[in-house]
Image (cartoon, rainbow, N blue to C red; front, side, top):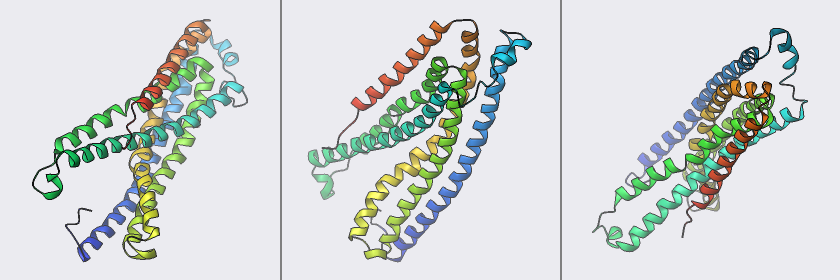
Length: 290
């Protein structure tokens, strides 16, 4: 990429990079499978937590009647929870991809400013301020984690206290199913787009400078955040949401059986407001390339 290696050496490095992308795509599939196993185990613990929490409030005789068919998808609330769980995965992926775009925009802006203020950089008479770029990458990467992190934590709380423990179970099931497929899609498609550019740069389909090359550059720009950011991030997403659901289940069941619907509604509204504020804040904090 730097241009220091040319000829056969550069071609060998490009081929090795393509092999590395293929290997990463395979290993990411294994990582996704392990994340699904962990999330499924947490979901099983979630169903047990429902029964255990209800057992503390009602007797064994009433327990079967209270929670018979609690996870039935035919219940409108559970169906809504299922749809929300699937939608959150897409929203999380979009937030991760946009975060990469905003951080990259900040870096591009800083580089242009250094070129403008220090013309000697291009002539080799001045050294760039590398620390400023590193600082931007570090600061923006941490700041951009806030909104997706709050979404992963607060969304199960909002659904559970707002729609009930059955809807929370459907929400988690929807997130597991959609998250598994979405993670595989993002990892594999991102790697394919990245390797497509390398294939064209090897001389296929017109080589460098051709229309195909320009198209694959665009694909690589999209593919990198797909395979390196959004795809791998879905694995901890589904595990975190299942863990949060498991932790809040006793409180949801206790509030529901003790007639504390007002408290549940207040918690759900608060969690929803936190998500909305985080989304608005993230949108306003975006940086444009000028």
